[in-house]
Image (spheres, rainbow, N blue to C red):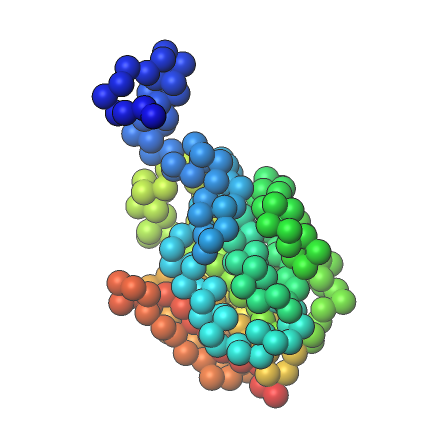
Length: 248
Ligand SMILES: C[S@@+](CC[C@H](N)C(=O)[O-])C[C@H]1O[C@@H](n2cnc3c(N)ncnc32)[C@H](O)[C@@H]1O
């Protein structure tokens, strides 16, 4: 057994020094390890891939609690802006009846998500498609219009005035994973409009949001005829989740 006080051999010391330098320059520990822990899964991540956050674990738990029928049925879920695949893979690992499609525009994200799906033996039920979700979703998932039980998303949502601060606190993460347009709403406008068409009647839309956007998101729900629009706070008490249903 080795102790912290034991002298270590030179290569190990080099590895530790290099990791310490990377950490102090702001590189996430997850990029150094190549893995991120998320609701019991060890997901593949690396430079170019947004590291999934604890707030998003709560989004998954809300999806699971809010849609009790998903536990028993063969629900179909779309994870929009899927990144590492965290949301879809965690849902599929917890709900054996569901199948999930993740959409992301980034090729590195898609290959990390696919590697994680394989490793978790979820590749039969979770697949990832490279697509720009700001264009029509028909090209990516044409057969699913009007059939989805759940659309869930943690899209880029940082608005212009918060971007510099966000880039400072996440200096190594890709800006395209963070920036949600001047008002932070670019992705939500598209997602709410398309979710309305792709959800089955009574299907659920669940979003992670930035605080300060909640009233705008509720307006978008009304504009597109989504019912029961509401938001919920995160563990700091800030508005962080918003949900609605497609009318039956
Ligand atoms: C905030 S990250 C969230 C990733 C993941 N859902 C999570 O919660 O960890 C947003 C993701 O949106 C993706 N993205 C950015 N622009 C996109 C676009 N136009 N179409 C599809 N995905 C996009 C980024 O590649 C990134 O993976």
